[in-house]
Length: 182
Image 1 (cartoon, rainbow, N blue to C red):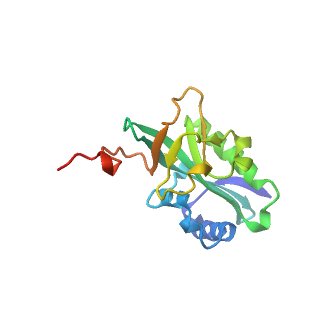
Image 2 (cartoon, helix red, strand yellow):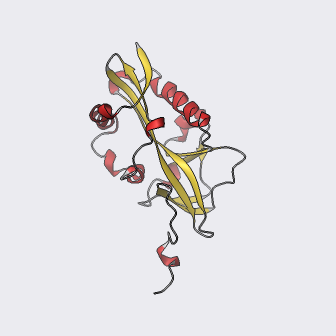
Image 3 (cartoon, rainbow, N blue to C red):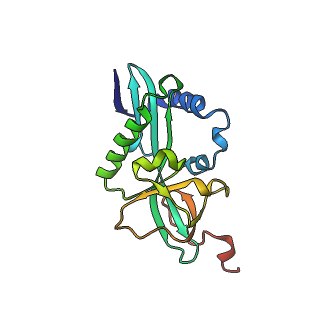
């Protein structure tokens, strides 16, 4: 029997092994991974699917924000990911079911903007659309074309030019070129 559950601290090693199996040894080099470095997942939204005592799938959310390049305003969001299904369970629809479950939790909690780096061909069914034509830079400058957003129509759109950063801590001068001279 497969069931939804909260991620638990004792699941960490098994989840890391599942992520390595799903994404391969270079997963730590992905641009989205830089946004998770020293930015722990939010426990209340980190979910797994368990098959007996084995973790079959996992999804996590972290706090991020987009800093507007021109106004310096901060637009808070959740970063979805990683979403992964154990190779032994792939093709059975577990990823879709876990996405629906996790997004419903986030929606009930009142979050109105979720970002992720992924393939639109998969994530459009969950309400995600490309951030392009806006130009939102990721920390390493890669994958901006794969940045997707799901947000309430009531929210102000993301800035035309911005920088995606980890956490929700305000930063007075996020762009080095805009810092005042000493």
